[in-house]
Image (cartoon, rainbow over all chains, first blue to last red; front, top):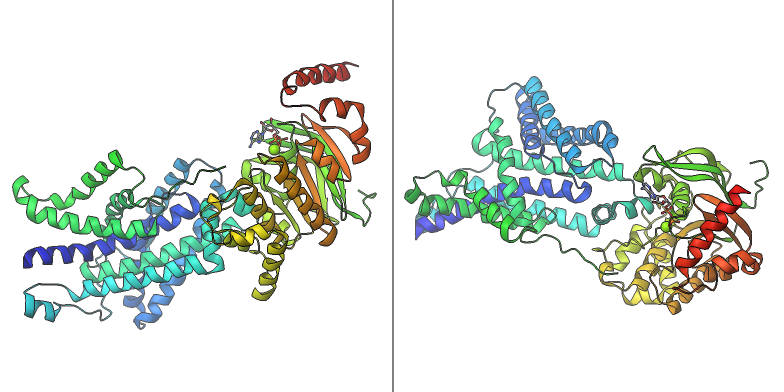
Length: 298
Length: 272
Ligand SMILES: Nc1ncnc2c1ncn2[C@@H]1O[C@H](COP(=O)(O)OP(=O)(O)O)[C@@H](O)[C@H]1O
Ligand SMILES: [Mg+2]
């Protein structure tokens, strides 16, 4: 039983990270209909910048954090100015390809500026086993993971309030609903895009730091993005709760599958379980668990 | 443009509009709207009414349309190169055909998005909201409903109310009667008239429903295939024989046949 609980818990923690990455996708997809292939690389780039600034300048981490946020806002601005603005009204596939290009650019730039060696993020995040659980129930749970989950929860709460209660949040939802109408009431799409990409960059930074603290900042970090895809298919591309629940399901699902089904088929299920689940969803519920209902009424 | 006096809020001067760099849709359209007026832009489906309105509000650009000739002057300023956002700030806002409410936002949130460009503070915006609710009491009742689940009439009211939230001097209103029951259409036009009289909002009104549009407008233009073919005071247009024959008093059935006649007449006019 302890093993089961331990598996579920560690799955949940991994799921939180998937959810964070997926969240960035959802934000951009909702506001601009763009499937942002570069989201994973944005995590890498943000974490790399954060770790790089700390390494080279040895400023305290909050300052490095603020600087990195500024860099991500700069990235958002540049993306709007040099990419999106010129591709307005193009087919979604063209925008998607542009984000593939963006992924390579970010990866290359990160490499040139900060080098390609693995960086460690050491900002005194808690680590080691949660003693209460280990002592009383013999369950091993990493404090870092618990901490990451808490941060993610706070972040999601913050985003929810931002979206529901603020003027800009309302404008973001308006743009997500109907571009044309949003334009017609004087909402500037360019401003909205910069904001959305900035928020997505911020989410990427948080996810990147958590992930980087766990396993170092290195190229493989951008590959979590590939896990975000099945999360999105599960949760629906336009749903924030969907991204979270989808992330958790995939996190837990793949860990459980690895332990209980893995031995039967020779292991390594963790690597492809998520895609199988996504495939099943595509067949039976293509709009995902929480995909937005399309309101049709005249 | 020298003749555009202080009392003209909008003048469209001989504009040509091309979509996708190839499709010529407007072929030299000119019209003026006096300060505080209601001007109707009439014509059958596909005549170019929406295109004209979007040329003014500059929503055209988002549809790959371009004004390639002529100019548009709003309150003494050439506005072709401004963004929709700039125009809303200057007091010119479009209510799009088909209403286009934000379906997943509540009615009240929809209205508030209309105040996006305003910088005069929460209290002033709250006051405008109250004003919109007094003009459209029904919106107050439905304020917490998702707009996507409200009726067509309520959505039309929401779209107009949302535009009002920007404190416009001029509203470009595209086919408000579309798909609404006659009684509701009447109700909406009454409110338009009230807004015009009490709030001093000027209207450029695109309509296929010539009958009602000419009852509320002071002046009208008739558009056919991207050209103005006739214009005049609303009263004069109502009494014009051609207008009577082709645009007024024709029931749903008669439409097909009168189109043929019209084609014939138009050919004759060109040949002559
Ligand atoms: N985005 C577009 N791209 C190409 N052609 C268009 C576009 N929008 C409208 N048109 C064409 O322009 C003409 C006028 O359309 P429109 O302005 O919508 O007329 P109306 O509002 O009077 O019904 C129509 O022939 C229509 O097919
Ligand atoms: Mg139209």
